[in-house]
View 1 (spheres, rainbow, N blue to C red):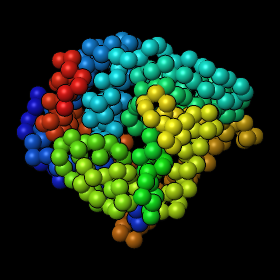
View 2: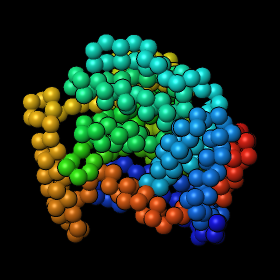
View 3: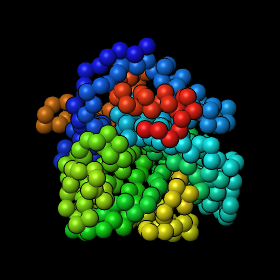
Length: 367
């Protein structure tokens, strides 16, 4: 069932600003759309499931693919949610087989994704990293030749759910630059980590750019403006015009630059994967999955859970100047998703709904 919905204002991208994790958790920037629809989640799932079946997604993986991209949308990251599903689904039929281990030695492994659908290849890499961490204390898996997925928190949280510490990252084409530079030379290099507590997991999922590239693609598709001070033109000047934007700006000036550079190495040369201009397609983009087992540090099988719980409780009991308490990273998005699942409805643009219907009809190219 679909209902008309009041237009939602454009929102700035999320990130760690002056207020840190305590500031409101905004969506990744969504172009303002006067024609938004209120749609039942079950209707969205049906469209996505039908699209997956038409694209040849293995039957056992359809639900995983659907829920992964839907979760990104419900958490307030639409650039990695339904819009990304609509885009990535054009590649689903290009899978050549399940992932395979190309090289393995000790705690490290390199996986050939064989162009598998992103959420399914990521499941393979996570399972391999967890197995190694169980046996060796750490599992470090690099993957290449795979389709993309949406949010990274899915995979770091999956590792943490096993009682381990998870770290996940990937690179991209050189679409990012730093303050003062005129040309892009880094991938957007997002990263996510998660750790378990006695009752839950705590996770963070962030781009090392002020806004993800999906914001730019959607702005070009919809003819809307970009969020301010997030993208630069060919001269390195900030622009809100999606047609003149040439690079995403790394956050945090020299600090964000250093973090992005580290992620570039962890998703590139560590595994012999391309970096910089060497990344020119989906298939030679590097991914990294790390699982760390605290039990191997000599503190037993579960003492880290109690320690993590105490830390999380201390954080959440720390007052802020505005009243209330400090919020754990990732919690607002997960709470938001839980509310949406309880309500059973979601507001999306009419244009995006048409794209999902087109995918369900077997049209994987029209916008």
